[in-house]
Image (tube, rainbow, N blue to C red; front, side, top):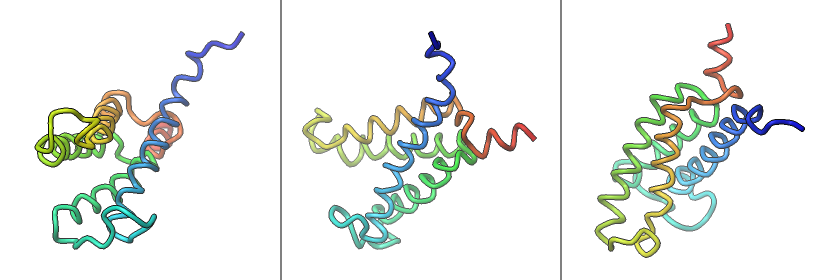
Length: 129
């Protein structure tokens, strides 16, 4: 029987890739209106526009697994800020204030700071050289 532990590094890469694809989508929606709905058409100079840039660039870097730890650190802080200053003022319960996604992203990014990108990443390719 195959040990699940043997798949742990690849599962870390999958977690990073799927999370970054979902996160990247928030940036494309804010900045380019794709997919339609939500915060489309925000100004680049607004707080939502700045977060869209971070979501787009940070999501792309995490998708590639490039500079994973520093990018994850920045994005974890961004998501903590998003929760406490955007969602929490609307009420204390994440399910009611819409902040559950921000909390999940924050803690996944915190995990990536310590766990790294996994084997399917540019960072891992650079280490192998």
